[in-house]
Amino acid sequence: MTLSRRNFLKASALAGAAVTLGAPRVHAAETGLLKVGLIGCGGRGRGAAVNTLNADPNTKLVAVADAFMERAKGAVEGLKTQFEDRIDVDGRIFEGLDAYKSVVDASDVVLLCEAPGFRYRSLAYAVDQKKHVFCEKPVATDALGIRSVMESAAKAKENGTTLVSGLCWRYDLNVKDVMQRVCDGAIGDITSARLTYLTSKLWTRPRAEGDTEMKAQVRNWYNYAWLSGDFNIEQHVHTLDKGLWAMGDVPPVSCYGLGGRMQRTEQPEYGDIFDSMACVYEYPNGTTFYSYCRQQDNCWGENQAYFAGTKGFASILGRGRITDLDGKVIYEQERVDSDMYTLEHIEMYKSIRGKIDTINNGDYMAKATMMGVMGREACYTGTKIKWDDAINSDKSYRPSSYDWDGVPWNMPDENGRFKIQVPGLGQVYHTVTR
Image 1 (spheres, rainbow, N blue to C red):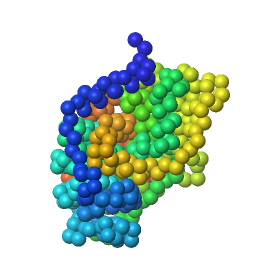
Image 2: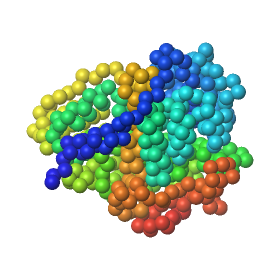
Image 3: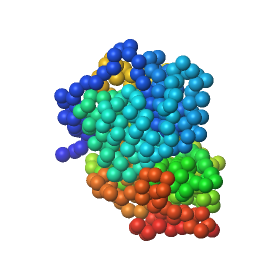
Image 4: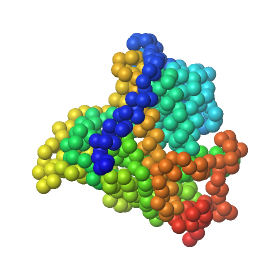
């Protein structure tokens, strides 16, 4: 039988319905005060706190946590300049790798914005405590974490608590408009897609005097695969998610790819992540996604999702456009104002307060992250990987323990350099030397 995108949509809808039938509903009073806790006080964490306080006027930030106290206190001071009367964290500013528990215990709603390698732990604890959750992307950095997230998402449905994903394009009004048209068949059945996130290098952070190796890597978390997942997961997950979305949230069956480091070569602070990856994702009906992501300075950039179908073509970001097979424009979007970062929080509070059906984004946020993990491993190893093998894998780059005495799997050599994955060598790693 031919497997079309519509068959995928139907299968996905049935699978989702099976999980949600009979789930209880846990709602806050429509005007009751909601206590919010923030875990992870970097730029995205501070931004999420601003978004959440703007989204619902009857919220108050009551607890914050970060691996580093100076960052937690800095976030509080910054937020007080905007929301002085809605910041009440006296005695509830926590530091360390287990501080998330104290924030969850003090809160009704929890914002999970810590390094992705820790996120699955915070989510599991918050759901166990029946708290409402905003969970930034990506949700984990390996299949072990993603399976934990799937369990947490299922438990949140059983609890009737809200779980909103930081895959914010799902809440953008303009992207939702054109993606809905694609999902409704405006270009026919999807035959291929080109998914890009081509940008410049992001930040690094130097070691602080006295840091253990564990503390140094957590401080510089973006640059280590066990903490960020590598950049095609931490950043490119947004574009991979648009591909997943177009296929009714049904993931591909296999993936192969290539990647490496061309600019991230000399400085030890670049850790062990790549700076370029290209992957091919395959569906059983022949639909193929071509994924390209890069973080290199002084190069051409693009962040876009293009889809080709049996009836036409679509481009999603910017001014969404749909054309027929001859290139004739059949829809060109009139853009509207859309602050997706705030909108996702507005919808979260509507869900929490019972104004709309309870939101649970757990399924697609786990699958989109898993697409990134599968692509990373295909690039790292040079092998073709099947979805079922990837999602059931126990391969991980986690440290010996989640505390400051833990030993990261990738320790620097005498020159401060780290082992770098080399495709074709299986589980053998290679230290870059120049």
